[in-house]
Image (cartoon, rainbow, N blue to C red; front, side, top):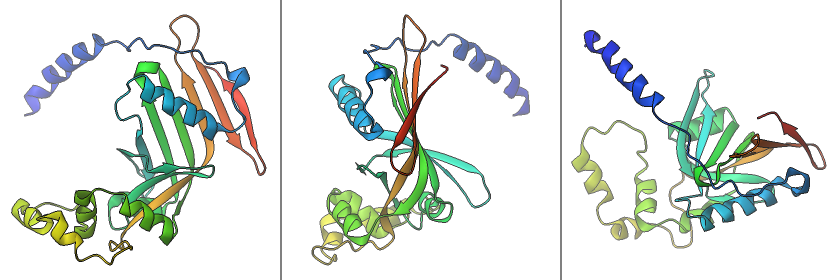
Length: 227
């Protein structure tokens, strides 16, 4: 095995050297006229990403930290957003949920390459209340709710047949639920209260633009960053 590491790395290095950054559409973005509230700008950019044909524009990278200070990251879905927080879903028993609960800080990255745009969010984390979690749980597909009820995410899979049997027909498992309530007690929403947000706009002609919002007690302050 050790004898193949060098050539493989060399071939991969050559392959990477031949790749280039995609040329985006680079829509107009004037930081001077950006809204005072970054969530408003995020909503505009999200809608424009969908209109431009970006697949799964609501998908993002969620970065967390474990109790030992080691970083972790994964791609997940934005469940909701409001004036206070960006909301994600995770079982309290999963590695993601444990990290969000025990070290309540997180960062998010949305990447829309067709537009040359990124949005970065960083802030503290808090669990949603029961009503909000239950409402979000009810919006899940039958299969997703069944998986949440089984609640074995990220655990070693020793017997795939057991998992198939446990899930079975989602409608049969969901019949065990209490009507109108979420019966997956470990599943919940987590809100990332944005303390800082950055909007990155690539440019094909001039320098890239980076606009950072920082939250104060009453409002947001903005500043331009070097690309």
